[in-house]
Image (cartoon, rainbow, N blue to C red; front, side):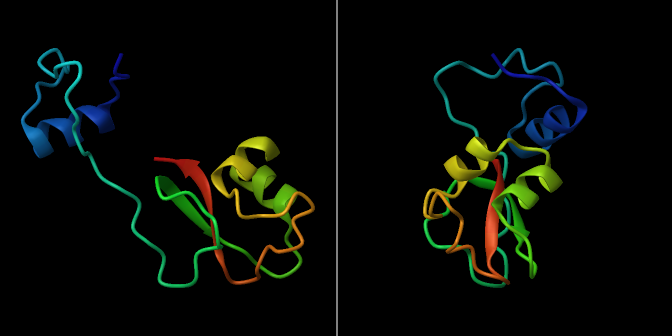
Length: 102
């Protein structure tokens, strides 16, 4: 099932000619509607490839801080950034982490 929001409708209509109500989008077919642009800096090692949004780590931030700031639970944050150690000690200041699935 496709969630139809004004943004999704507009992107699908312009990108691939799907109707506003998405009724002519066929199940089983793929439609690329965009990806998050890669940040200009270093992406944290092990971050998922299908990331929808990146966040740059600042001094004195930890995994908990970032997950709370971006409104995701800590488990989801680690799923998006599986290269991070469970204690978050390898979180690099200035690196970009993923904070949302594509």
